[in-house]
Image (tube, rainbow, N blue to C red; front, side, top):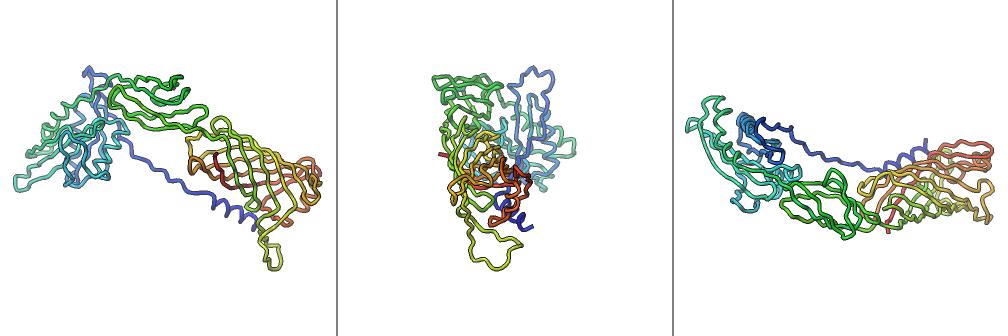
Length: 429
């Protein structure tokens, strides 16, 4: 049990929790009214932002009334209310509100989800004036971030029918005058020649030898893209095209050609590897060694007496070669991989190959967590197979000074140790 305790403790130290932030999506799309004769390019979409003074029946009637507008693609009720007294925004000027306000958040979210307008509504009821409801509204363009319309109206509500059928007509007239026309535009993308760009169009496009390409796009619109080129790290981003013509410059970093790996075998012994990276850091072939000269001593429950030396030393070096490949591209910060390693076992006290086992083959799979463009940590798990060896001798000597926390299978001519785990750091050069 003590052997496996060390294994799980080391696994716990190497793994971290990943927090995934999910943004609530729109409640659904409202279909285009039949008979409008309009195409999808002129449909309008609104994010509706209400103040905390708006009562629920007012909000419900507003959404139902807006749903009767022609050329409506989508309505989304912002889940958070804003305080009734939010700083004013002057017409035709840039937004001058706090960046963490609900209005600013709604505008940023609307831009990422291809909405046309944000409608901010504030309402108050005057009990002294027969319960008259006064409404203040502001309409913002998502693309320009400017206020398009602002107004105030008031009316008495004598029944629920008034609220759902006639009360919002002044606001409806303003919203009906808004145009969200979209037309064909041209985006010039500047990137490394040969770059493959996906996401902007249905099919990927490539940048020619001039270092630029012109892509026809619907404008205005918000697009996500991924760019990859041989010898360069991948890039991804979001681009909002507000006018045409427009230009997009994609900055690309050269992919690393070499990687230095510092690891720890079973949490005890060190190792050093140099990897030659191939195909944009996707695959590698490398060389290096595992050393047993200096290691950490882990006492077992069978040990007797007190031990004052935390270091264990064995006369063994294992130089070798390794090959492997990552199962995800460099745009993922957490990448699984598979690898295989072949090593010779050099007995440094005899100055020859170890007579008990001259070689070892390892197979493993792991996870690489890239913390920075040039730095990653890793953890992998696998097995070590010793062919053409004295399996009985290796089984008899298992434990010894090293106390490896693993299980083994053996015969007269082979020996299998499982699991074998490693953890460490990788530096991309």
